[in-house]
Structures are given as C-alpha cells and as structure tokens.
Image 1 (cartoon, protein in one colour):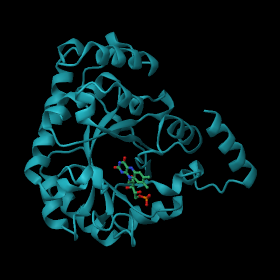
Image 2 (cartoon, rainbow, N blue to C red; image 1 turned 135 degrees about the horizontal axis):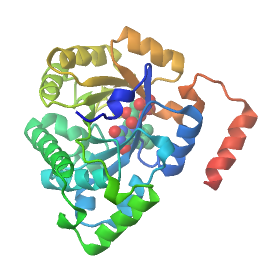
Image 3 (cartoon, rainbow, N blue to C red; image 1 turned 180 degrees about the vertical axis):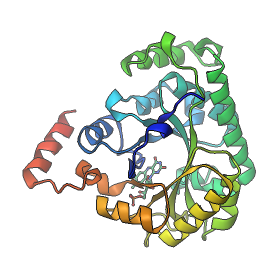
Length: 298
Ligand SMILES: Cc1cc2nc3c(=O)[nH]c(=O)nc-3n(C[C@H](O)[C@H](O)[C@H](O)COP(=O)(O)O)c2cc1C
C-alpha cells in the first residue's frame, strides 16, 4: 500500500474545518504558514458544476504546498458527477477527497445534498461508491483526455495543475483516502442509524459536527453524541474520527480528544482571524493587525 497523508498525521490531530466563503486559498495559506494545522480542507465545490465544465469553480482548488495535507471537499447529488469531480481533484494533486454530508444551507440541502443525505442512505452510498470508482480510475491511470469534459475545462485543469506545482507526468497513481464530513442528524440526533451506516462504507476518515441540520449553528455542539458516534464507528471500522464544534482553543481541542475519545478535532470559526489557535498562542493586537494587512494584500 502506498503511503497517504493518514500515515503522517501527528498527535494531537487539530485540523482546519472547511468554511465556504472563508477558507479560500489566501486564508488557508496564511493559516498554514502561521498555525500549521494537522490537515486542511478546501471550501466545498459543486460536483455538478465541475462535471459541467464550470471552470470558475476550479478557483476552490487552488492551493500551495504549505497547505498539505490538503483535502478537496465536494458536494452534490449526482453520483456520476462525484466520480468526475473526484478524478479532477486527483489530477490537481490533492491528498484526499472529502464528501460534504453536513451542510445545512437551504440552497444545498433542499436539493438533497449536504446534510440532507443523512436521510437518504441509498444516495449517500451511491455517492461514496462513485467516488471510490473515481479514485480507482485515477490510480489505474485514467487520462484527463478520457473525461467527458469540454476542452476549455481540460485546459483550465492543466493550467491549475501547473499553478499548484503539479507535474502532470509525475503524478503518483495511488488511491487517495476518501472521507465524509457530516452532522449528528437531520432534525434530531440519529447517531445509531447514521454512523452504523457510515461505519460500513470503508471510509478513511469521518468528521462529525455535533449539531443536527435543523440546529444550523444554534445551541451548543453536542459532544456526548459525537462520542457516541465515535464509539459506533470504531466498533465496525478503521476510520479516523474527528470531532467538531465550538472548540475555541488548543487546550480545549486536546481536552475534547481525550474526553470524547476521538482521534482528533477540526476547528472552524475560532480560526477566523486567529491562525494561532492551532498553536495555543495568544497573539498581540499588533500581530493581529499586521496579519490582517498581510491577508488583505494576499
Ligand atoms: C461560514 C461557514 C462556512 C462553512 N462552510 C462549510 C463547508 O464548505 N463545508 C463543510 O463541511 N462545512 C462548512 N462549515 C461548517 C464548519 O466546517 C464547521 O463544521 C462548523 O463551523 C462547526 O465548527 P466550529 O464551531 O469550529 O466553527 C461552514 C461553517 C461556516 C461558519
């Protein structure tokens, strides 16, 4: 088995959670340079858009070497589009592929994507299977030309490969880890059913935000249910389990890993304007102002 980013993760695992409209390339680069999180996700990108040649979406997949391990996050509902988008992400040199099964936004969940998949295990399974097919296609040597994409999309992918520092001829053909980021339920916690299902999907990693879709971002993250989900997953699978929700400091991150028996955590909102959160360092006002200026210029 070829090595993947999972072989190089060092404890404590504290990653940067994906945030649409926030964790774009400049944000991620600065966070990587200063806070060096254990792993980083892109903002989510629509698989239907990618498979239908929306070159503008490729901007979500621009990254720099410093951000590694960097995982491409995908969302949508069409299994075949997931396969194509997975292959595109492989060509762009990502370290892993993550499926969004947690977004509560109406524009996403009304279509049956994101957290709505919690109530549709049939489609969730088809999506996971399609991503695995895409990963295998890539490992077995599929070419960019083989994809049914328009020439303008293929050219844009090749251009971004170069900008991401990827040598198309030297891409390592291996199966990348597939993961899912999700919530504890749809309108109420559905830990037993949902995580028993996910545990059987042979995933490399499962990240759990301790809220239901209905809660959106209200109330408090339910870490007792994250712990219950972790227990269920660990019974049936080798997947790494990351807990997520309301963590504001490195100390809290380490405490939560121990107390709730997860392999690691993701930090989202607390990293806004504070890449030092991963280090447990309290930056001074001047350091924050200097960083804000750097960010604005990047
Ligand atoms: C503005 C914003 C955008 C988000 N976009 C995504 C996304 O693209 N993909 C995803 O899986 N989660 C997304 N999330 C959820 C976060 O990754 C995370 O699960 C949530 O904020 C809870 O973690 P926190 O309390 O550490 O922020 C988003 C959250 C926010 C606040």
